Length: 498
Ligand code: HEM
Image 1 (cartoon, protein in one colour):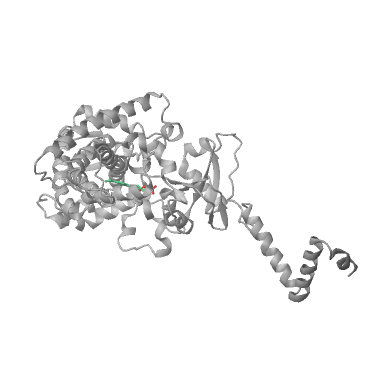
Image 2 (cartoon, protein in one colour):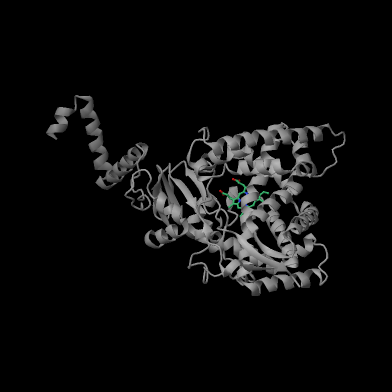
C-alpha cells in the first residue's frame, strides 16, 4: 500500500493501481489466462507457433548440397520404401540444395490431393520443365484458374462420343504399323509403341491435317522436344546453352510454324465442319470472351500430346512384358477377345472395348506396379500440418504413386502381378489414395479414359495377332535414369498366333 500511495501521482502508478484493482476483482487465475493468451498472440504475430509440431524427420546425409541425390537417384523406390519403414509416413531429405518431403500412405497423401493450389503449388515446381516444351501462355505458365479453363476446353475431345470415333482410327493405325514386324522376331517394343502412340494420339487429338504432316522430320522434332523432359531440365535454368536445351527450343519453334499454318488454314475454311479439338479451340472463348491465340492453341495441342506420350508408351510396353512373363494371363486376355468380340475378331468398337474387363484389370495392375509418373510434386507456400508434423514453407512436397501402390498395409502380396486383385476388389474410402496412377484432386489427369481407350485398342490388335515371350526369359529391369521409369533393353519376342 505504501507503494500504491507513492505511485499514485504518476501515469505508471495509475496503470499499476488499476491493474491491481483488476487482479483483486477478477482473481489471479483469470489474469494468468489473459497473460497466456496475450503471450500466445504476440508469439504468433512474431511468426512462431506456441505448440507447433516438429518438422518431419530429416534423413541425414554426409554430402553437403548433393545430399541424398546419389542414393535416391540409383533406386528411388527402394530408397523411399526403406525411409518409410524407418521414419514413418512423413519424412524429408535434402537433394541438390532443396528439401523434399514425402507423404506416404493414403492418410498423409490426402493433404497433397485436398490442398488448394495456393498452399501446395504445382506451377512453381513443374513450370521450368514444362513451359519450354509446351510453350508460353498455357498450363503451368499461366495462373491456375486459367489452366483450369484450358483443361475444360481440352476435355471437349475426351468424351465418349469422340472415343467411339477414335477406336477405329487407333485400330487402323496399329494394324498398319505392325505390318512391318512380319511373322516373328525380336524387337524393341518401347520404341515401336512410342512411335505408334504419337501417330494415334496425333490422329485423334490433333486432327487429320497435323497427322498427315507427321513425317520423319516431325518425329525428330518430337524426339528433340522430348529431350526437354530430363533431370537436367528439371534442375537447371532453361536458358543454359546446353545442346539438348538448344535442340528443344529449335524444335518448339519449328512445331509452332507447322501448327500455325494448319490453324490458319482451318480458320480460313468457310464452314469449319471438323468436330474435333482443333476446331473447338479455334471457335471457343475464355470466360471473359477472349478467343485463344494461335500460340495458345499450339501450346495446348503439344501439351495434350506430350502429356500422354511417355505415360502411355511406357505403360503399354510394361503391359506387354507382364503378359509375356505370365503366359496364363496372356491366354486369358486373348480368349476374352474371342468371347467378347466374336471368334472371327471383327473390327473393334468402343462398347466391346469396355467389356474387355480382364484386359482392363491387366492394365490397372500394370499401372499399379509401374505407374509412369513416379512422383508428383508441389511447392509448400505455407506451413502444412500432417501426421503430427509441420512441413515448413519452401519444402517440395511429394507423393509417389509407385510407393503407395506397394505398401503391405494396403495390398496383399504387393510385388506380385495379379490382375485378379482388381476383379471384385473395390478400394475402401480410407484407402482411396493408395491407388493413384492418375493422381487425384485438382491436378488429376484429364487423359485417363483416353489412355485406356488407346492402350486397350492397341493391345487388342496385338493380342489377336501375336503371342509374346520374354527374350531369354529375362524380365526387363526398371531404367531409373529416365524421368519416367521405362523398361531397360525393352526387346520382346513375338510370333504370329496360330
Ligand atoms: C495429369 C498420369 C495420360 C493429360 C496427370 C497426373 C498424373 C497423370 C499422375 C497428375 C500430376 C500431378 O498431380 O502432379 C497419367 C498416366 C497416363 C496419362 C499414368 C497414361 C497411362 C494422359 C493423357 C493425357 C494426359 C493421354 C492427354 C490426353 C494430363 C493433363 C494433366 C495430367 C492435362 C493435368 C495436369 C494438372 O492439372 O496439373 N496425369 N497421365 N495424361 N495428365 Fe495425365
